[in-house]
Amino acid sequence: MGNLSLTSIIRAGFARVIVEAIPIPKDYFQGSRNCIVEPKTKNYSIVGTAFDYLLRSYLKFLHPDAVEVSIIGLHSFKYVENVIKLFGKVELKNKTLGKDDLRSIERVVKEYLKEKEEYLANGKLTRRYVELTISFARLDSIY
Image (tube, rainbow, N blue to C red; front, side):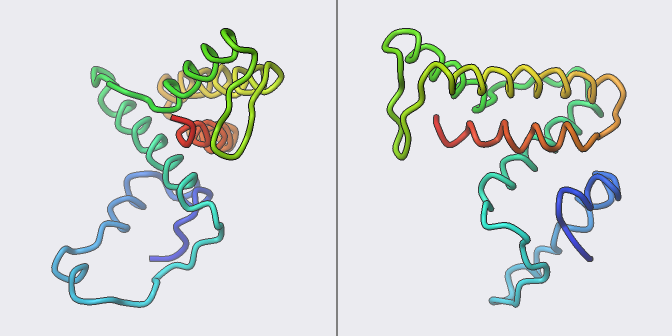
């Protein structure tokens, strides 16, 4: 199957890579196996979330009438925005965010949404969109 990084997905196209990555159910449940492709990151959750967002975009591109019900990253952004506006900061598990952090997050969200809109219009997956999606995916851990 080969490398299953986001870069390889960009180069190969979504559909083929996704279909190749889906295991045949009977093989999948036959005990433990060695890892087929070693991850190139320790940020498994963020990369998985980014992949989920990219897959949702691809499906939305294929089916423009589909409705996106909930985007956790946007909920997280709104939460941070509201708490910082009320109290000047937000206390998270490992970090405190203030107004400067909010400006940075707001910039990522705006750029992500702009790139997503462009992708949905033309179907071209750009490196910039993938990078912004990874940054945007980090917001999921807040909510």
